[in-house]
Image 1 (cartoon, rainbow, N blue to C red):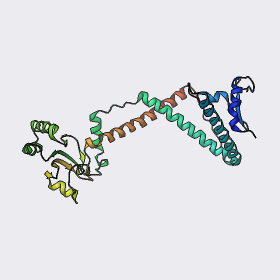
Image 2 (image 1 turned 45 degrees about the vertical axis):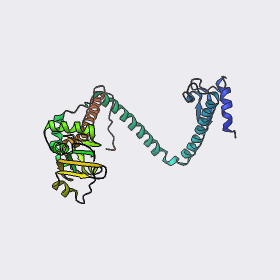
Image 3 (image 1 turned 120 degrees about the vertical axis):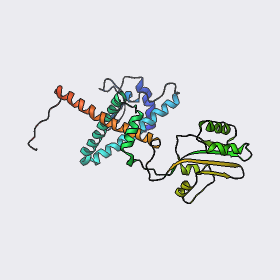
Image 4 (image 1 turned 90 degrees about the vertical axis):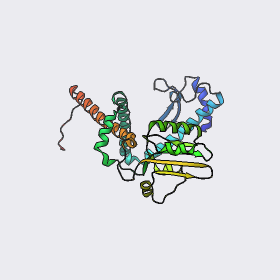
Length: 287
């Protein structure tokens, strides 16, 4: 029984000689476990260019040791699982086939899949499937401003934050840029109410009741004033707004397109094979 750590020295001799030339196109044998052989060409690319000699030796030696150990164990597994090897090989073949098909399908999808989804397509899907889009949380549209207690012109904030006029909101945004510690003034976006609660010192026991009964809220603590104007809200369990589901709908539509295109591509390949007489189906007495 030889010591694996001595293999590296043997490699240096093998690489510079013509001994132990194997029938595999003149490839040199490096190691053998029963009827399996590790060749010199199998080590190509193992060591990066520029690696010093000592590190190269360590990397190669470790790889050979691992290869030997794995194949010794694999030989024992094959010998002791011989009754089941047909099933195992079938699983390996099926897995390989699945990987090849998956890779080829992705290649074709990258070339041919239309990933552009127009707004009207989103709207059409949303209107047909509204029952599928139920909110899991209460959501709100709002104006929110958080300013230090010593900030000036507080009455302007109170007046502008409840206004729907574009000019007032512009003035409020300019004020916030100069004075606010935080603010939300987006007129289209929806926010999960519990996320907003992290920004303002409120903790109502009944969120639905709070949303129904509070349109404008002004609070103050030791350091900040908080202004909240609820422009709209939707409760958990109701239909989610389109803008809140846009990314989800895009994913659904793209998945539908992918499946449709894959089926189309498979049918095209099948018809091409029929025209080329590339396959035959034989009748069997077993049917």
